[in-house]
Amino acid sequence: MAKLGIIGGSGLYDFPGLKDAREQAVMTPFGEPSAPIVTGELEGQRVAFLARHGIGHTISPSEVNYRANIFALKSLGVERIVSISACGSLREDYIPGEIVVPDQLFDFTRGRSRTFFEDGLVAHISAADPFCRDLSRQVYDAVREAGCSLHKGGAFITIEGPRFSTRIESNTFRSWGMSVIGMTTSPEAFLAREAEICYAVMAHVTDYDCWHVSSEPVSVEMVIEVLNRNTDVARQAVRNLARHLSPLRDCNCQDALASALITDPNRIPQETRERLHLLISKYIK
Image (cartoon, rainbow, N blue to C red; front, side, top):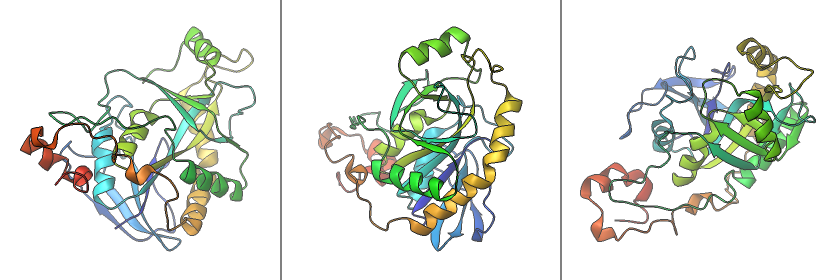
């Protein structure tokens, strides 16, 4: 059973030093995850790694099966997830090459499956603080130990993609007070909360989106160049996190469904009960 899950974004698909590594093909009630999940031991910690966009980056942000990814990690015993992803900066002081551990999330996506709870079972989770504060603190400490320039806090806006923003969109997001922009954190963070999994983001700033008048508009080449430079930092930070990870969860993520399930249990269809048994069994028998 792997307690720590790593969902890798663009350009980060493996971790040297992972012992007893093995691939596991996991099927879920929501289909297959993006790729086989690699499990193993890292710095004495059992971890599970999932390539969000598939091996070789074949899955668009809009096509990622976020529900299957989170459910698959939950089925392997994962209690904490760290998302490693690329982002664009919407602030002058968040400089390409730096890392941000955000504390707020704005969902600006369209058409994605955002919840496990449907077909006769309704849940309203609290998402006021969408990222786990305890895990975010530990991620911040792990990145700092790796020696990278980083920022604690900031509002992360998730857009649909796969295209990058227009200039007016980028400047509008800035006027809203957003700090960084990406394409995959929503609905991933909210599904993790529904699964009672702690979730934090290690966001690698690759560019200034397209609002910055003295910088070139973001391009794939720009993103990959920065991610390649930051790969070693990300790997070292994950090793640091695995080595120092607190055995106890000092947060409320593990009880997120305790006050969220609103449906009369007698009204829940049997098929829905069976599909969501992994998530609801400690509340609904």
